[in-house]
Length: 279
Length: 103
Image (cartoon, rainbow over all chains, first blue to last red; front, side, top):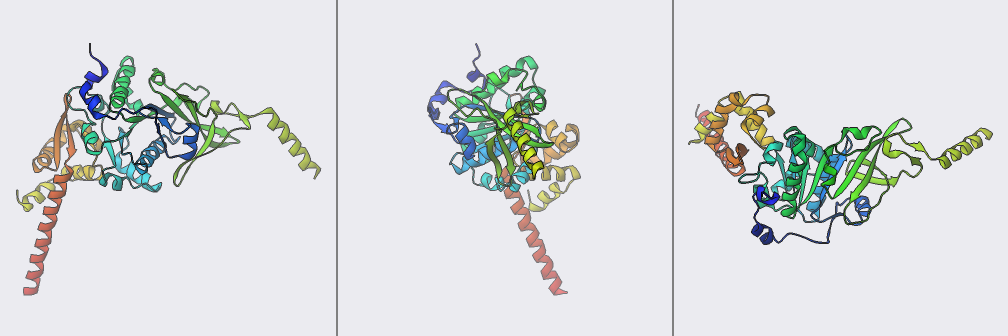
């Protein structure tokens, strides 16, 4: 029988000799408020899914996770299927992150490739050279949704499992980006193919319409083996990256994308209105 | 291969130039011939010859990933070739200066 690890060409000896299977620790994102929400960070070696619709900040969050990792002494690899690296260098520079410099220092790599190559199971893996060169502790795959273009829907879950297990075997904490257009509406399904069951943690990003303006919400939907903040928190993409703010305390139905003010807040508004009129 | 021949290879066609720009801007690009061709708006057949000359020059290298052959930039060799050409151009400039002072 073919096991996930044998399909990816990793022998048991490699797993043992790598000596990098870590236990109990946390992988800090370096975003203070998010680390607080995660009670210290993601669990070491876990597969994390960052899901959200277009323009939500998934790539920014993923890059910030890697750049902060470098600051914390953990090198990282960013795998992109669609966006070209020169665009990523440019956008990151606007946020104050010099990725080319990090690459020169052998602390970071961008790999731009096709999803089918990442899934190749025979011989040397696409990641092997980068793994040897910079020994990353963190990896981002942007995005897992692109795999769906290259494998049948019935095989997507198996292939994603193989990729996740390959990275786990290497002791690398992975962050997998998932584009979920349906999250823009009322539904809050993450993936239609059950990938959310494969990952250990899900961070969902969502646009929210409040008083005719578009704001952004972040929520930790799932975190295996750890408690976490269950509140929906507002966040902004600032000139230095993602900044998480307070929870949407005065609204309900935020997760649907069209929240309403809670009843007590509506009463407060009425009283405030009446007081204004009296003046 | 002499520096002049290297320069000649790099300036051989517009496609070679496009490939050089693509790989210099995106040094982490690692893909099949067809996918690389798509990234510069061409087909695999159309760029095959230019890719071969860059592989012969050593700027690009090939690697087997599973059943596919992929192309990637050889960063060390690329730097070496560019340094050789830069040196060659500086020498030419030097020769030009000497000639200019003569006449």
